[in-house]
Image (cartoon, rainbow, N blue to C red; front, top):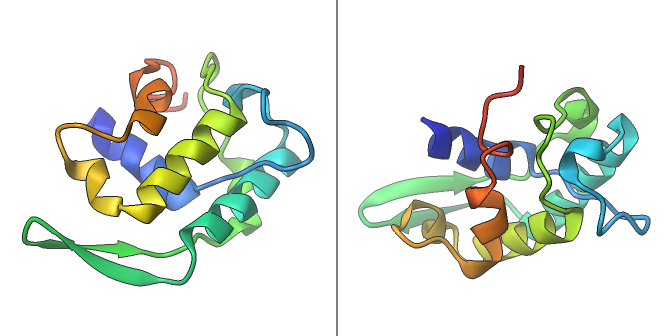
Length: 121
């Protein structure tokens, strides 16, 4: 369930943050920074599309970022904005990697941070 929630976070929230916040932790982002992060991630995802991964279809749809500020990352999530965006870019390029046994190297920090992989309280 944790990995599914994480992928939901990566594909649904897809927040991104401009404005020089690349080294800022995800859990430290303000509501407006979360909206910026979402908009940047939506740009990385590109146009809506469907890909086939080992016999099942995955719909990639950039999110509506209007409420991204209402969905903060869990406290203690120390993954940086740059690490998040690197992971988002890698998964946007090959969404099937999210469901493989070996996610892209760019996602190691995000997938391995137990605080980032917990349900928000």
